[in-house]
Image 1 (tube, rainbow, N blue to C red):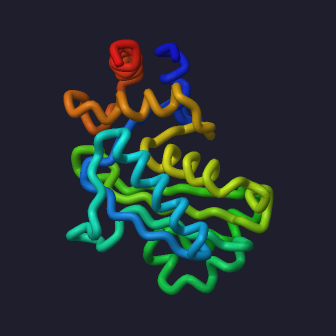
Image 2: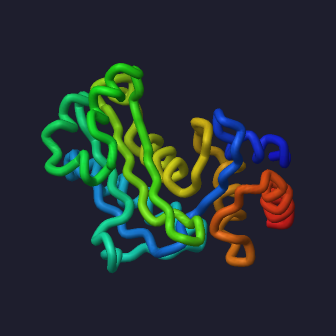
Length: 191
């Protein structure tokens, strides 16, 4: 993976670069899955963060859970989640996602140092994701929540290596300078 490719992965439509990782232990909670699928997603999150060398926790002292994943059949089901507008600061989120035709959506909150403080992920399982293999979807979901990717990504050994490199404790939890991609690429080559 080249520095240019890494830069592109974290460069938003407005041209800004942001590569941020979790700066605190991750306390996940998953809503809307059957028990048999829940274990698959929990396992993927546990394995992914273990590979990155980042801790999980039962609870976040400020928020309770800081990685919240919501699985719905259709975006209109978001209307049934109590206080979702307050949780997301995005009134009418379900309607906007329906209009856009999205199958998934993530939003991040950040600590003062720029590290990820919380991630809310929403997946519409009644659309194209309905036929996804649970283990593949779980791995992809972990990767998309581990860093602030600006593009859709697919699980691969290169993406796993990039995530691992980004969690190197020598690196800052967040970077807004595209030159950060050079540091990530160097760590990937050294691994």
